[in-house]
Image (cartoon, rainbow, N blue to C red; front, side, top):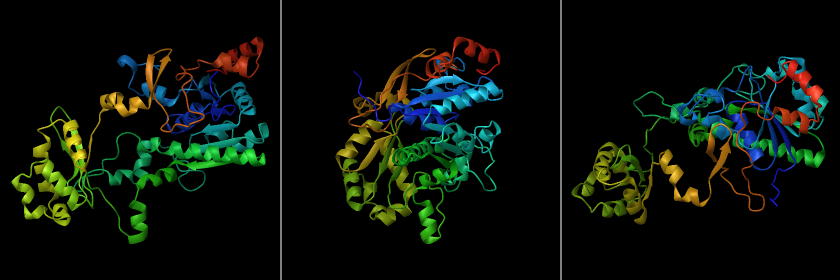
Length: 405
């Protein structure tokens, strides 16, 4: 018999789309919650039409991006533009514990699915809204995505080279940071409900959540009035510090030398070539002032070896170094394999596919894969007849009215 999971028995209705909301719901589903993912064929989740697609073939059920965000969920389609669709949404909420949505402020209200409206259906419901900039304020109705939010919260300003324009992080960076905070807020509200019997509304602003990933930038301004800026791969307290080209096609190794002791070890690994005795590099301050020249000399050494060799010899000498891994490296990484990081689930359209597992493992109630991401509307009949107890005639009426579109 399978072991019970931490959130088994918790019922979630996930109205969100794209990345932040679905990933938040995924945290709950991976830990045993029943998650019903509500979409629409009229206005489907845009993540379904974002690649990469299995075998390079476009299809709304072939997006690896969508699949990775949505395992352990039932797939339901509802047309909230027709009354029967809204009524069905409320019936789903009536049996639920948690409701998630990540639309622009005002969208759920437009469909008659605001928190106040849903409280009439389920007084102790926990609802979280994850709009870009929260409810209230001059910009609350601005729609946004992770690419925009990483600029608004200052991440783009920090990424790039000092003499160049802001570059920004790869992908919608904030989309992979915010869900952890959102899931924590949901769990806190569920615990509050367990203790008091009362639900509550969570107003999460993705922008405010994303600001937490700025590391010391906000603190530096708060304490010193100093605005940090782009440094490329440099570090204010380490040199050499960067990603260095190695032998092979687009292969790199990162190296970080913080102290004079580490510098001495680094020089021994290189065989103490004459340039390591250059007075410019004899102190950390000197190495920082001459970082550009030092980086060129370091790379003359690293290009002779595979990144794995560079990493191994430097780590053995007590110098921080690591291979810059690509997607293939990550799938073959022995540490990730040992921890069974990748779940393999058999998707109805894409076949066996890998999914990232949670980054944590609960000793008594570990997260586990139960089902792959749903195809569009895959579980409509199951949700309606098995979970909601709808009769065949009632199901046919809703079908004819376009409620499942």
